[in-house]
Length: 147
Image (tube, rainbow, N blue to C red; front, top):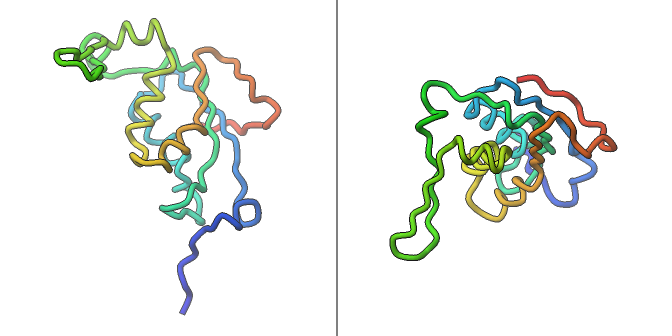
């Protein structure tokens, strides 16, 4: 009987290689884009996927400021966080957030789709988001990925 394969730290360079992918976010719906990125960061697209080990790949997202929202989300979507002080719930509309930090909506959407533990934070470090079409990761020879 065949046993299920589970990746180990020792297999990191032998069994699987970490790839670099570049994704163009122009006119991509935010949620669908984020779910595809989360799958790649976790390594669920690979046959060696192991839930307790990070086997995912690196993802570079360019043109993050051109991501698309459906419906009236552009005017109505709010990002909330609490400072920890009583009555200090901060609400930032999507429009303002994109003006200040065009890469944050994608980062936050992907972060909320990853595991909420040390492993998820390690996976999020492999996500590189840039507002424009240029990125400083040419040396890694990223493969273009269409969604």
